[in-house]
Image (cartoon, rainbow, N blue to C red; front, side, top):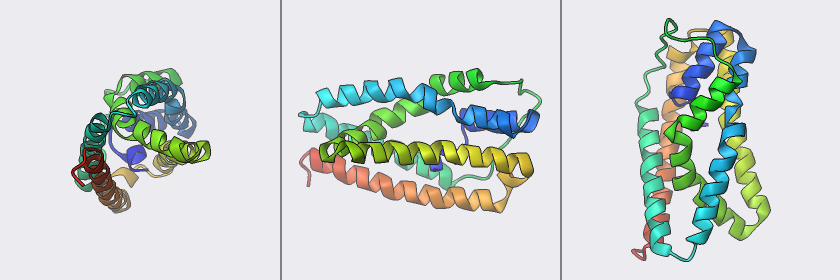
Length: 193
């Protein structure tokens, strides 16, 4: 959910499309991760499956993931609202949303350092655990962007209001806790614990 609401290129595009056109346009952009992330997920899971016996490498990846999540948590804790510059925004489409998400480093960093290791670990339990992670992740990621498009479409002041800022800070705190869990897992894989 934090990734879905965190300021970034895709969120800005969701907002600008909603403000310039309508809620439906913002929702189309919010759906872009369903299209762009599948190749990223398959590639990162494949690479990590090949590295599954290399605990030191997986430990370093977990520590990197902890740093990524900690940074995302820090950014969320420091959120002051979203700044929009609609004069520079041009009409966008689902294709533009796909391009923005595919060219952003965020999905690649997330899936390589956090998402793929989580799926790999979940697959060790059952396919249903991995599917539950994927379903809940995308329900919250895309769902939060859709919810934001609806809120923006109905209230243009939401993004600088207190509810948004406090929600982001609470989610930032949750991300920091998750980063600590990744640090613990990374240190265990490296044999420190």
